[in-house]
Image (cartoon, rainbow, N blue to C red):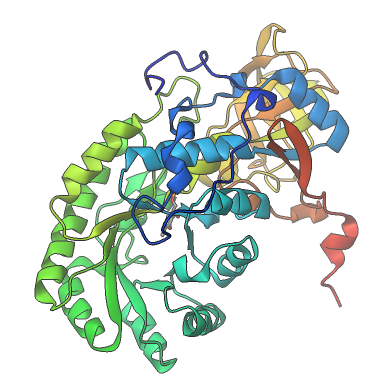
Length: 455
Ligand SMILES: Cc1ncc(COP(=O)(O)O)c(C=O)c1O
């Protein structure tokens, strides 16, 4: 594997045209064995570079894509998605590594990962439905119920009636009650709240937020009771998102508590637990100066933190798998010299990519039309009537001119999924790259799409 501390701007082979398309595999492995989980994830793709920077994407290709498909445009590289999954799975040998569909639920991504052998974790009925549509085996799905609306529970329970391998994760006794009322007695994991949250922003530090999971002290009693009505197969926690090197200590402290609780719950029951699921949360460097996680090291630390548990480790990475596989292309339509800054107006908005407005997230920006032009501090914003519609403030970018295409990096995770039609702007198109070929994965919405549901 490329050293995670190696110069991140070099050593990458970024051209999708150079990537080997994956062999979809012979499918001759035993689907229940540890090796068969993530089965193609253990192979050659595990050695891919640990980070793809915006500078690694060939600028000319990006400009061509913008010219052919229009802007704003999402681009997602499915080869990179598979590489990321493979690298992650290789760092957690013998673990059951699911992809958290919420990060990017597009059919192109789901089908690519499912074909690659990745099991899927879903957090809503729509995600379950789309995962199945993309080819997921319902018996292997895990559904995480957070304050679940009735229709979500109805959907999951009726699915479980037919597919008894489906697992439902509940984080409140009310959810257990509501499952019992639906005569559900199947596979259950209890989501616990370790009271330690981590991540890139307070709005994603779920491990310390009472909304998520059963309060730590109540877990043994609730688990005991749950055993009377359900098949208690796992303990689950997801404590935060976007954890990089400086957040690992806290992340591992939370996992220690998960391990302690798993041991306590397991020793109290007559049947052992099948798994301990420590969720996702593994971050990627959004800033060009940030170092990527040393995943092999992370894998060892997570194992050590969990301690000796007689149950299989499960993980649910979302962001790590798709973030650096995607970007947004947007065209400059305005350049304004204001006394305090140079304003660059683009056709993407917070309706396209809301992370900067919602989480104050940094997304690197590169001028794909003229990457070598002299750099100039500019503020980049979209067409929406709010000061929150800003991608960067006083940021050095190769001097953007009207008509230039700018690339906004690391948009593969929680990008399109959070897109909206604010200001009656149709959602953008998305192009998938695979084996060097580009295809439309989601067509650009039209104004008719925006008004379709009105009566
Ligand atoms: C239950 C659960 N699992 C997995 C994830 C994926 O997290 P990440 O994208 O940080 O890996 C999330 C994110 O919100 C989550 O809530």
